[in-house]
Image (cartoon, rainbow, N blue to C red):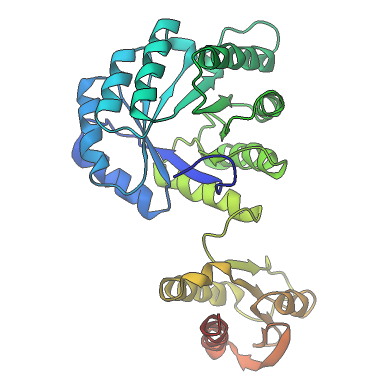
Length: 339
């Protein structure tokens, strides 16, 4: 796969188990791929971890990135065992080790990510100043070696600082950028930081691949990354269901209907891959419901114990709640059959 240029913005994640624990690693990696991971990064702490790369490569269909700290020996071994990319942190590896890693990467024909993290940078002045200087100093080493197959990341746990770093580095260099808010934590605040930070930069045209860093199972990172890209209209991964929050005007059981629609859409998406491009409206009343339903590929708007069904902007009919989901899915299937 490619990162940067005209390639789609990709979604990646990192495994959370010991890489040498093959059984747990493969289970986690498989679930990540099933959830849509397009790259998988693993920690390589020792030779056992590096040896495990060869097994992982034989079991997953996506590129594997080896995360290396401190040791060029492990970087070289990871490449030998089949890593598709190496991530190094210039803040904890010597210049000589960087040179040796670059030499091997050139021979193997694989790229290197320069992962600048705020926790590994000497702070002089502002955090963003220090991050950008660290990145620029590292980039110069690679440029002096005439090695340009690099990806950059400048991550902090803070939205404003991270955004500042990426804006400034993107103005200085034209290398692909890996976006993320590092050590964001878990829960609503962590998700909000990642959505805001990554989403803000992507909306400005900055970024080529994303990793949502959460203290959660890695497949949740993948789901969050895909949701960010889809919410911005950058990529489509699943049908988009628009539904109102419901209020005192609602005279139908909107939550029950919505839950059933969600279940049926998952089945429909399996049968029709093009279903990921659909927009469906599930609305509770006549105020905004008809308008949203008309603007969707197909949609329903609640009334008094009934729903109006719309397809491609036109009204099809009015149906009881008991049959409305069946009618909606049938209308969507008709649309998909003509595509």
